[in-house]
Length: 133
Image 1 (cartoon, helix red, strand yellow):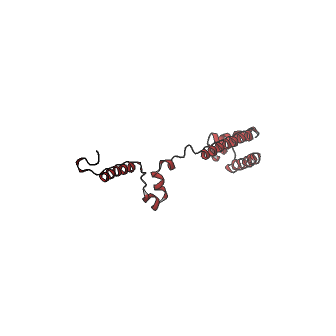
Image 2: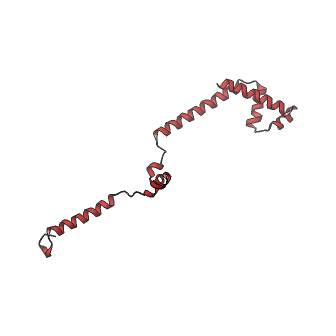
């Protein structure tokens, strides 16, 4: 299209270009859902996938690894502390926590009162806490 053809002026061509450019820019705009920002923070986060995905946050990954390492150290320390117990104490710990038996059941098997088992477990726990410090 040229100015002067079929009654088209330079102004008409400029307006057509401006409308075309505005249409192209409209597709480049981001759509924001302001209701989420105004009413509550969580809906705004739901609309933005970058805010939702926390899997590759370096701080989170490092913290998680440190917590896993700390948990493994505590488990290893606990196992070492249990190995240092007397064999009867180790057997009682196994019955209580590995076999998941009640104090009453263990007391009946050993021919003592439930209070005696509770007391033994209390002393074992105290000894383990002391070794874990």
